[in-house]
Length: 381
Image (cartoon, rainbow, N blue to C red):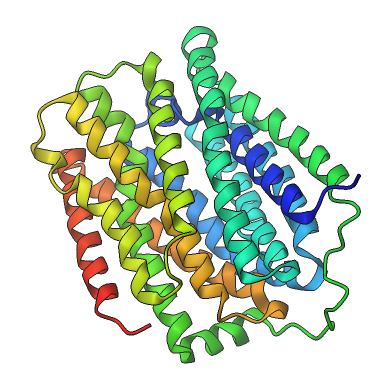
């Protein structure tokens, strides 16, 4: 019996995220152990995001032309290659090469399979299936992150990267086999010419709904960067030990999974975007003033509920207003805008760590998120 597209999608997202989770608990620690400063670590992420921004709209446009499934599988190949380059090297220059290669993979993967699912199914099926996929995907990252942290602390911090690369290739082959019977496009679809990237950008600028989504997506992407980059450092400085950083991922994964599950219940409208943004920002508003490791950890875990909600709520709302023939391109343009926001967030937060500590940077980001939530709440749907 051949699996349905919903089953293939859920399995693909679960295996994709689990295969990348090996290094989640040791990423920044690996870089600092190699002699990099926090600013240099942020600069590596700037490389990743810059390359991703350049490629993202064009990979989305390519997906609309040749098929999202093909592009997704190519993305797994580039992502896995980048992970191997990371694990087999120890210099800033080669880390930058690894980031660039991984960024191409990320651009190819970015919402390609989600667009494929949406083109084949209804809005409700996509919303429920995406929430289910993200819920199980986050849970599936737990054993990989735990085992990766254990392997890294015992045998060397390069091993989680190598395992991530090899796992990505295995996932590529498995999803290719399982999805061969499902076409790139639904049979009902009429093939039309796909506008170029720049033409669609002009259309999106004139579209009030899509323009607002792009703006809020970019601002939130900038504001969450300090949470992504500094959580291991914040916990370490508060008394946490590297060998149990993988255990922290259990809480991250479970609460992100909870957020993904809750996203299916959020009403589909622009004003609803304020809900996940508040969940992200509010718990960390006082992070700079909490003296206890466990209180910091509790606040950090709570904000992950919003992180789980956010991408799904944005995707579901924005894709209601996107035609099937240009879905991947428009989603990729939005993703690229988010990446640009992320680059700004990385640079600003990295510079701020030269004058204030990472927890204080968290507080600034949290305040920015609450202002964004207030703005979204006051908008019309």
